[in-house]
Amino acid sequence: MRSTFLRAWLTIALVDWLFASTYGVLSYHSTVARVWQGVASTILGPTAMQGGLRTVLVGTALHLCVAFVWTSVFLGVALLSERVRALIATPGGIMAVAVVYGPLVWVVMSMLVVPAASGRPPKVGGRWFVQAVAHILFVALPIVAMVARGLGVSIARQTAALEPAT
Image (tube, rainbow, N blue to C red; front, side, top):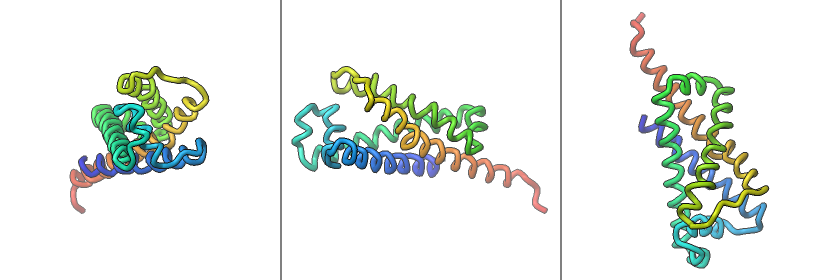
């Protein structure tokens, strides 16, 4: 399970980091540094935007922590729920679960976690909905697919170990 978790966590961390960085640069004419300073500003306040490399690294570290938590949550649910494991055993099921899990992650983060950390109320608008959809593709799908892959390999190994040798 450790290797499944690590692969899922690092995959989502990388995929979402690349998406957020690219999206910030292309859609908002920002810089990669400002994207991650913005993340850091949720706990450090507005001065993080002038913090240089240190606050870029703080934002990236926060991103890694958040990816760690959401990967842990999903892997835990998958390990506890036979129904979820059955769903993610097929590509269509992986996508269906990602369609639910991605917006769930975004709603919790944007409506609860970020406002609690920053003291700023959530803003729901066009950008908010873009992020809800993006969380399906760039957060939930990598987590769900990597967990499904890892659990599928683990189950196949267990089944093979139980089968009599021929």
